[in-house]
Image 1 (cartoon, protein in one colour):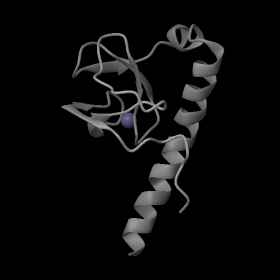
Image 2: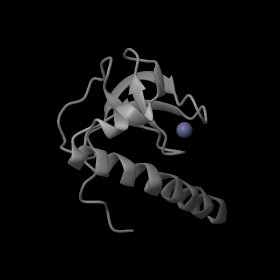
Image 3: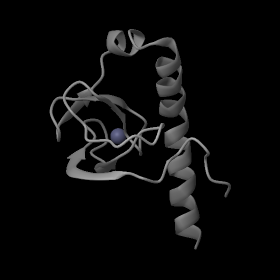
Length: 102
Ligand SMILES: [Zn+2]
């Protein structure tokens, strides 16, 4: 599979946290720009399993982002977050299906 040119493989290890919707465990964070990432309260994240758009309450706890918070993002970031939240669950399902076949 062709690598996504927007994805920078420089994820920083962080304290594990779980998605509040699907409980998927994540322990790394990265940005689309490749900037070093240590999440802080108020930062946005997206679950890599179900695509839920979330906000960090602190460095290790997240909650689902409110629709108004997503709406208030700058247009470019809002479009990127919404697109990612729709595409990620499809990619995750495809990846797990490939793993089951091999
Ligand atoms: Zn999730």
